[in-house]
Length: 244
Image (cartoon, rainbow, N blue to C red; front, top):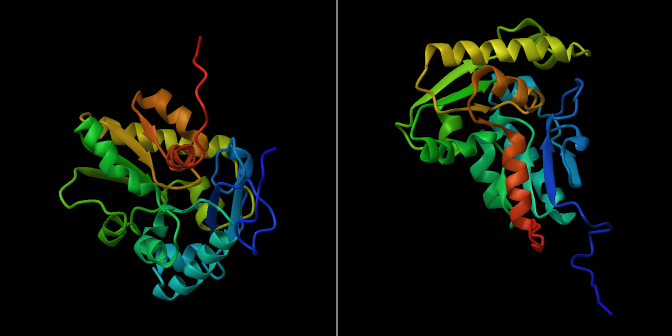
């Protein structure tokens, strides 16, 4: 008989490998979005960061959010998740501090994939972000991205449906319109930079449109899902039985 034992007294349930820090925001999160649990083929656990609004994180870059981020991360750790991610690439601002505050892996931002992407392509990395005006060198530094990597950034802030639905939280979201908007941004990005090797969708709201982007530009497309799925598989290894 296999025996099991309690690993921590604060843990009342099991089976959630990835904990996700989520913003204090209100808009529809469709399948594919990090904020929709059905996006993942494995259980995840969410923890809202109190007071971490889109405005405070993106526009203000409010340093006082650090304490709520650490508090939320420690709650996830106490509940037994194996690693902690985020639901906004701009959480890069707190990547280093949150990682130091807990004893499990932390990967808050999709930007963490950039060095890997560059190493395997050797070509400029295109980044589609929620708001290009808010993405600063400090975010890249927080994600451990070395100076000098060829990065080309395009933002979604000028796209009407995305801006109103996500950045301004109007309460509704037309997914077909946003798909058209992000495909157009990606197509323009590649047309202006034909030597680009891959695209990273920085924003956690953009993975639902990764397939459409890839069909439009014929490049590898990375996002929060590729990162989270990768880390999950390192923590929950399965036996091999062969493919024949």
